[in-house]
Image 1 (cartoon, rainbow, N blue to C red):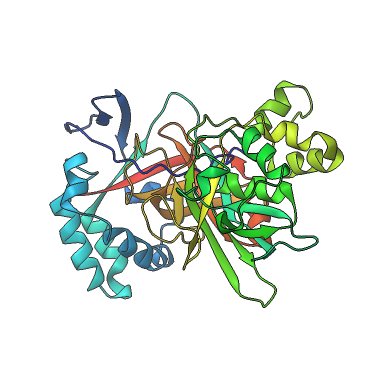
Image 2: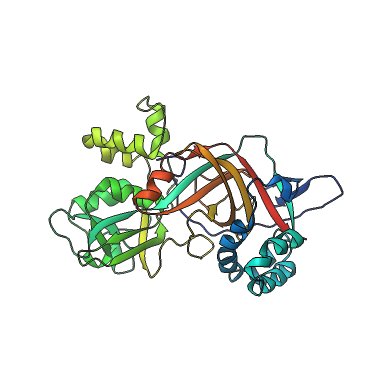
Length: 361
């Protein structure tokens, strides 16, 4: 798919050490890894499209992230892009602020900084797929979505097995039905569901089963789009070009899948896409970031282009998610929602852009 071939969500916390001087850069860094995020002072006037609709739409999203803030989190991130106590106050005041006063609230309580980087910014998109499926194996539905192996399930598969070895055991009929969350039609869909990290299964009775990320086998991640490009099979890499190639080469599908040894297991969830921060993703308001540079719960403004429509895309968002392919300070992945319409937006999304961060005063 596009550069969102990744959605594996390891929970991380970012430690920030910074010094802020007049007209100079704010630098966020993790001392153990040395990552730095230079922030150039900016203003709300730099945010093209900043209006009442933006702040009203972001309020419930930010409130969800507020509930995940804690002093324990702050211990890992002393300043947490504004300080734990500052955020506590803001979160409390936010819940009591009327929509008519929201814009003034944000403009009074936050400073704006542009995130700078030596490399150009890149903004891709991801979504939650919805597939037809069954709780029991039947003709046409014979591709399993596996749960994370338990002690009982390890007699046929180990949690550390590679993708190739797991598939060999499935092909050999060693699968245990109590380790299968659901059955779907296509191995291609199953592979992409693993890449997205979560999705929904529409059952025969019309009910929807949410498949959430349940763990991985600890093997390294390899992007199959990159493999195809290196082999000269594809000139441009997107979800659609990869799917087209797989459809044209069914006999080579599994061999290509095996190039990515990482295997994703699933668990049942009562809600849709769950982010790395532990909140439900909100369409076009949740952004996946590199948490080495930007902590979860941070307010962001993205100024880029929607590739699907070739139109400007300017949104107030919250950093709530991450992914294996999200690397660097000016790198974001926009959650487009669930289903076919969201897939149409997410699939081709690859655009340069500018990222701003809003930090409590």
